[in-house]
Length: 301
Length: 320
Image (cartoon, rainbow over all chains, first blue to last red; front, side):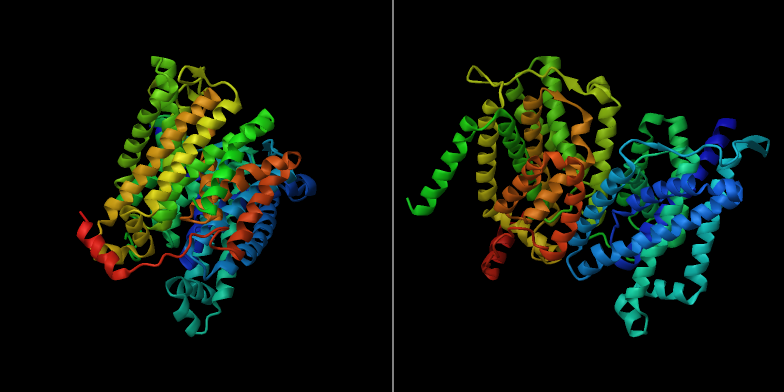
């Protein structure tokens, strides 16, 4: 039971990260029907930018741990959001009317470009986040010891996700995003500037991914230029699990995948941990391609 | 014999003479290109002709290479004898995994095939059935012999690999113009209409997939023979990406395009070895630019002129 509870909290903490990255995939897919392969690399860029800002600005020394981390996350979110915006302008917008495959290849190219840019800027060796920033203590919860870091991670993801939910479901901008996701042409006729909506989606998604990158750095300590690929694929699995294009679905899918993976690693085999996620991906696509919460067209043809 | 055939024959002869005045290093580069030509052509059957977004081709390549490596090191089977078995096993594996997913739409299929290639890689790293040697792979694969002659140097492999490539090019060319090839093209253009006119699209797609995998499996044998050491690293997702890129940049469904693509993507970076750090960066940027400015690839296949009525009659009459 102790073991199960530990794995559950670990799964929820990691699942929160998957969920944040998954939101970027699901939003882009919702509006453009495009798998943004470069999204995982934007997440990596977030992690590396975070480390650089953290060490050069000494944020946590000036502001204290909590405020420092929040300021760091905000800065990274803005920078990565900007990169996402530029990415859409250069690699995706010219291909808006081309065959779908062209955009997929362009996304792959962008992914390779970013991954190697990170390698050239920060070097090929893994880098280490200073490990003293977040408290390494544990609190007892329902009689079990739970590391505080996990609670902070989980709470941060939940706050960001709630923020996004508020934005997309309670504001005018959010209505525009959802309208563009349903039918771009109709949205245009209603006076929505679809280009602006897409640009916005490409800022918000990467910003959340960048925040996830910082969280991974703070949680695991080690970051490497290739990590975006695996996290990206898992986050995409999470997005499909929840129903791609569906924002609450991505949140649910992320948390669920985190828990499945943590329990799988504990009770089946840690060596097969990644394979379990991919198996979930394949099974979901075979059995229920619309995902758990997806109700939009089951286009299986 | 017309001048075109003569010119082609001359080029082939010149090409066959290359190893005699090239260094072993560059001959080896040519051998690599040859392997990629075959692999990319086998992927072209699936991606270019049937229009299936398949990014897991390295998985079938791996099954072939590991089959050869295991049969050779564990059971002492001569390398080249294992080639048909490697192909069959890869094809069988493809049939098992593709059956339930072949109907998936474009990018869903793409993502599933990525999942498959990753699962295969993880299985190889985890030393599945205690046969694959884990992360270190399998070493000590013996050199192949052809009519009692032992192939050791790149110059020897050149003829084996490019001989196989020539056969592949010829067969792919025949296939392209066969009824099967035309049915695939029709499915790629519009699979709802193809289904509607009586073509069993799922069956044709599956056959294309299995055939492509079979060919990739046989190429795996050549790879194992050439390297004598294989490890899971050689069959990662990025291997699949490279193959995918060759087909797309060369021109989907175009044999000449795939040839040019393989030379450019595998050969060109060798010329810029000193800039190795930068080449992947340029490669990524080039992929984006290429899609923006030349979506169809470098050498798109020639437009096909169909007599639609005659074609449909044939297709309906011949459909299972």
